[in-house]
Structures are given as structure tokens and as C-alpha cells.
Length: 202
Image (cartoon, rainbow, N blue to C red):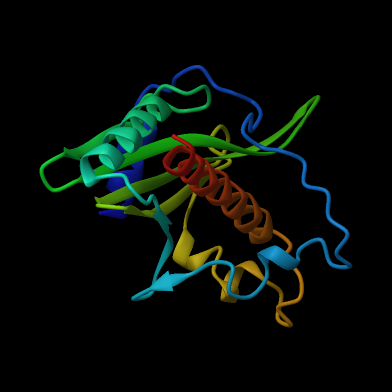
């Protein structure tokens, strides 16, 4: 079933591709270990599945207002540069204040002349809105790597968890899967921080 699912995804036409993570910012750190924020506990699991989750407080805003703000942003994300044309909102339920987006985008590890290293990143964003707050989840994370030559599919549970994404001592990122772990955490942090700004500054 998984093979059929991936085959169907790869058969779909791809949109114009972005070759850089335009959302990324270079982070300057004075820590002795620059990988510190990506080490043990940085990737969270719920019932054996990788789930990143945050609850954003928005005092004074109703569930309807929060829904409208998040819906606008999640719909806009579908058309951002770097999103593939399969990206879409799959649930838009204002009555129950739930939004679910299914996103596919390029996650770029390295972009140099004759050396473009990237993966297709698939994930769901779930927004559950209530009076005064919203809970955001990033889940169902899948990677399709080396797509142009010999595609390999990785599921987050078998690739970026503490067991697979770190070395045995858990004081460094793993040699191969570590770059997936690092960039996924960076992307999650960017999205959660953006949603926090939208709900607290508007």
C-alpha cells in the first residue's frame, strides 16, 4: 500500500521548483555544540508517531477570529514558492474550528553549482481553534529523497527520531539522517513562530 501511495505521488506533475529554503534564516549561535537544539527530545512522538505540537495563546480573540487568521495563512501557504502543486487544504471546518493542510515542498540541504541536494517533504498541518488559543500540529511527515535518480522514501518515525537521527551517544546528529532531522526542526520552528506572530500581533 505504501509503495502504491508513493508511486501515485511521483506520477503527479511537479510545479516550478524553488532551489532554496527562502524561509530560512542563518542562526548565529555561541553554543559549544551548534547541534544542541537538535539533540535528544527535539523530535517528539505521540503513540509512536512523530508529532510536533504547540499551543498558542491569543487572549481576547474568539475561536472564529483565530480560525479566520489561520485559515488565511494556511491557504496562502499552498501557493508559496517551493510548494508543489499537490499542496492543498483538505479540511476547512469553521463550525468545528478545524483546518487541515496537506503540504508538499522542497527541503533544500545544499545548493551549489552541480550539487543540488534536496528532498521532497510531505506533512500535514492541523490547526484546532478555540476561544483564546489554537493548537497547531505538524505530523504525518514523509520524505522522498534522490527523486531525480533513485527515489528513496523515508518515514519520520524511522528516520529523524532520537534513535535514528542522532549518533549512539546522542551528542551529535547522525551522519545521513541528521540533516533531515535538522532541516525539519528548522522548518517546524519557522512555521510555529509565524503562526504565533499572526495570532499575537494581529
